[in-house]
Structure formats: structure tokens, C-alpha cells
Length: 160
Image (cartoon, rainbow, N blue to C red; front, side, top):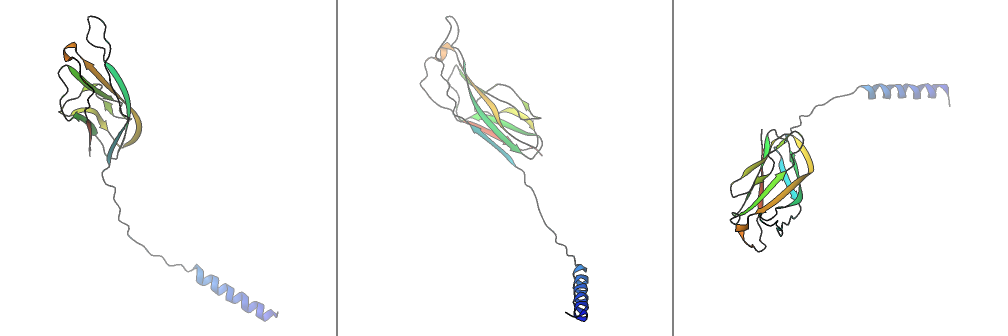
């Protein structure tokens, strides 16, 4: 190759490099949002059977475990629970939920057809599994009750 061709090639390469470094910019507006998220889930199928008592005392109450999980991106959410129909006379079904980080558990609460607060102050958390403890108590006056069920309805009420 001649020196002239090499110099011409170098000049073309320099011109191409110079043109490539002259950048153009553009902008684009991106719209986004994150909606309120309040989700709970309960796992397990607790079964409670009272079958013992000490002489002179009411039947011995029993407990059964389950688990639950929560995700909320709000502040001040709470969990309530109720059952669809009343418990038989002399029988009490209670539940206690372990609170997620930063929230407060109300401890063990008797369930009825009126919702009761179980956990309050749930703020921006995704946590689980957390412990659930069901308790069943009966008086002697309750008598014998065949196996039956109650559906516990848990509700998460979002904060702000």
C-alpha cells in the first residue's frame, strides 16, 4: 500500500470517529404508581377436640396451631376476625395471632359474629409465616357436641 492510501484511510477513520462522538440525547416521561396492597393468608386446618377433665372442674381446654402471612404497603393496617354463626352455649373459640414486626397483637380473643381486633399497627411489611393459636374451651353445661365447624373470617383493613 502506498503512503497516500494509508493517510487517506486514517483521515476517513478520524472523520468517522469524530462524527460518532457527536451524541444526541432524548427524554421520555414515564408514568408509574403503586396501589395500596393489603393481603393476608392463613394456612393449616386446626382441629380442636375436648375430651378430658379433672374431676370437679370444667373440661380441659385445648389449643391448635396454624400460620398466617401478611403484606401491606400502608401504615396502620389492622387484622380483625369474626365467625359466621354463634358458638353453642358454654363453648368458646378463641384465637391469637403473632404480630409482624412493628405491630401489636391483642393476644387471645374470643370469636363471635362481631369482628374483634387481633393485630393493630401493621405498617409496610411483608412477613410470614407467623403463628396462630386457636383455643377451645367448654363448660360442663355445654354437654356433648358432635363435630361441627365454624368459618373464621379474617379481614385486613388498610391504613394510610
